[in-house]
Length: 301
Image (cartoon, rainbow, N blue to C red):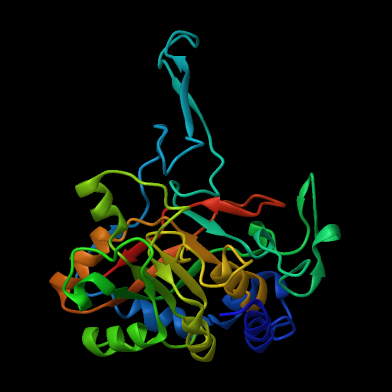
């Protein structure tokens, strides 16, 4: 897709003035009825977390590893009980940490979601439009598009794009249809590939969504999009735009993204249950001015 074609697509899915509370973007679509219907999907009570382990080990897919060290080993406070404390820190917008991208994380053509000038919306203190603390928690229906299962392969190879036709085929094969207010999770099997073949640099090549999926997702009115990579196929299919799905979902549609999830467990659980819809819950940290948050999303079947 040419840059000019991409710009036209961006404008066609732009939802900057659709909701009174622009800070919540597409999460405005999730009403009490959506939450109640999602809760009714709980049958077995199986709870499946979807976060990767906190990774302090450097590698080609983790050039800025998270920090974790102990600050107290039970040798300070007395009398009983003794206390153990630790410290954690992370530059989470990368390829290793499961995290949520808030609406202020991405700007395109100098504008963040809602049309705010990025030069004024973001400064050294954080983001002033679309910060993660304005989102709150989300509880809605989760839909898993298990692409390796549908294709009969162990994983989707890095560099291969998931197209709109693949999404429609997955819906038919898995017996589920994406609807308004859904959290859509796309499994490519990247973690399974990493376990089998070792790490690689996903900034250079990774499976992900092609931009032709976005009009379908916009038409269906999704509230959240997530994947076991960072959602974008790489190399990018749009010259000059390194993360087109981020631009379209976050900056145009107001749809927060979940990057670097572990979808292996929910794939197994959905397969055992014979259904690919479930109650989905995510609650990012309340970070005033934050561009996102490390998260542990949860699916309940």
